[in-house]
Length: 77
Image (tube, rainbow, N blue to C red; front, side, top):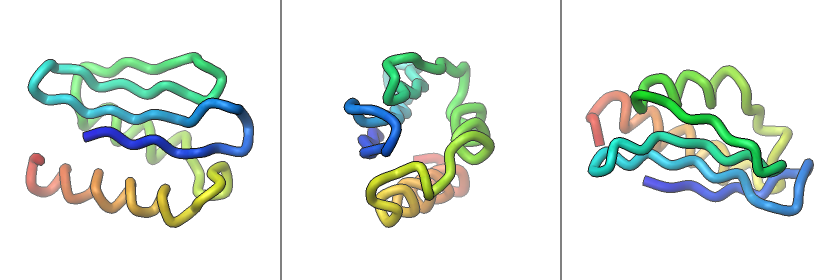
């Protein structure tokens, strides 16, 4: 599952990736820096702690991502 969100603080989108098949759980921020996680649970916790709706050009896309991440936490996919 991949998300690409336009943010106000950079030209590049924020990209959030949960790839269970390859064990890849990453976030690429708009400044090209990134975060790497050992599990989807760690990634989701980081997103909830560090990203805010106001940071993104389209808040509904951010809310949609949070909804999908919550569904993933509950159902595992």
